[in-house]
Length: 204
Image (cartoon, rainbow, N blue to C red; front, side, top):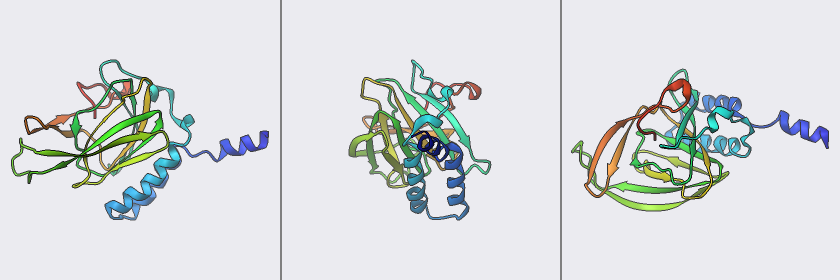
């Protein structure tokens, strides 16, 4: 029994191995769909056991969900974040302008995907149509694949805290936020909520 437990702890998949695996994929310069497919497999492994997540990355905020930086690639090819959501906390409808993979470490999130109907020729105008919605549960993953699968909204509609892991194909410092009723879109700058990274009015 003790030897089995020791072996399990030794071979547990953690952030360090995840970063190495993701770097190896990106070193090959694969297509975006291939990148998403392979990184999704690593995120799935990472979310099977949350013991690797540091305590500082489990901190919540009252005004908005917390956004903690776990790793930033030296070549700015990807970042890894932990997002911590108190009950009722959610994002606006937004995009990222890059590929992304989300995995659920604890509890679940509701995700709604949108399709953009206009041609994007007007910088402040956007027409959206809701495509689908669903629950992403602990141990499951979801992805962003621009330009057709990248506009969404996420929220914690449960009565428990949720922790999710997000991997983006760039350092996310600005996103577009959409207002379907007014058919408007506007850029929003964002920062991390980790103590060493400062704060922001909102986080995506």
